[in-house]
Image 1: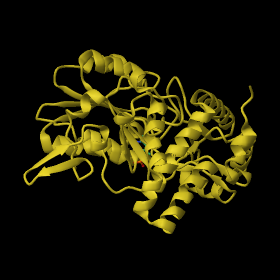
Image 2: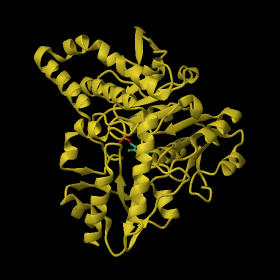
Image 3: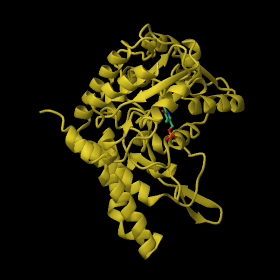
Image 4: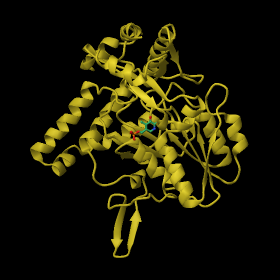
Length: 391
Ligand SMILES: *Cc1c(COP(=O)(O)O)cnc(C)c1O
């Protein structure tokens, strides 16, 4: 069955006059997501915020079921959190590190995660080490196996980095983590919504995701998965009256489900919109949209590499919807601005967002064009035509 591009574009009206290749930054919300989010804000204005939350109770709770279905877990293993970074933080900062503990991570690691490793290393005397890549540019499973010893407290890696098409072998990493019984945290910010994700196949204890990127949800939404068997072993770095119950003047009890990682006040309209976005993604089918994303990205890379002076930089065996390139004698910022004048959205990836990887490849700034299933082959042709005029 051919992909129903017409329907995807009808649900995304901006595609009529915008080429949006910034889906790894913030994608375009489909109409049902936009409508559900706005409707809840209107209800809040009409009847009051608490009253609106009561009335929308089922829709709000549904978001947990939707997220659980999306990644193959139970609803009580999901915490809805305002973004992927804070979701990831709530997991990471719950782990009690002590001097000598080792954290193993990836070269492609996201800046916010690495800054957290450095902070914890300075505070606790734990150490952080990035596992080298294999010749394809993905995390080397051999090198990981050789690094395992009884001091490794955590394996924490980025599935898909912010700065390229790489897809790290998270399930192979998971096998190593399970064999050695080591906590395993996956930053799946760019992969959730882009490709099928199953936490049991990955074998992770934690997985963090955001709403606004490939899931096409509202901004300021995200979620955290925590495996049920580790929830009660971990004390969140912050507790409030939602995460815990105050029982007596000197005693509290922490919730037993993953909501111990949440906090009380939240953007309910966003939470509802996130649930609708996940339902919408599931309706298309992640296998179907993932295949299309890979095909579009392949087409874009192939067309780009024929343009004079253009170098495509993506690495890895499987390559996803994030396409990065440089153009000889042109600053990436300049390209971004000139494309923007033609109603084409791309963004740039800076060294400081994925410093280990950029330094290893001697790169400073890349143009990032990230495609989604609602983009079209025609848009890719138009993109390359405009770009070739610029260079
Ligand atoms: C965008 C991104 C994040 C941060 O997500 P937020 O929702 O902005 O907190 C984390 N990791 C990776 C790999 C990202 O691309």
